[in-house]
Image (cartoon, rainbow, N blue to C red; front, top):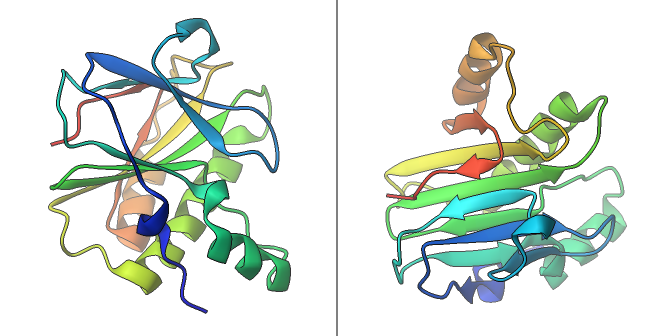
Length: 165
């Protein structure tokens, strides 16, 4: 089954920053400009006009795929510009969030690669976000290295998503 993620992309309005948040299981991630108190992640974009946003849970082909593959667990959002592809998992919980986020990001990256490829993007990133733990103090050097080896994506942890290239 072909999954066309890009068919569901939305243009991001030109602004200094915007937010992403998740309303819960089986609901798509939300792109928001006006309510920072709701944001789980803040995305820097410095008034650029080339950002695209995909709410992964809105991809109809993926929802159909998940019916036949119920153990599939994907991340919440994809952001991209011409040079950068960034997968985002949003969490708001105390325990067991990090490894779960990593697994969801990896699974979505594999599905995206199988359906679109990622070679067109010079910069490939994945962001694990947890509003409950906005400043992650533990070193994740080994996990980040392993993530890179398995996916060819740079893993970042935190609520601030730096400007895409």
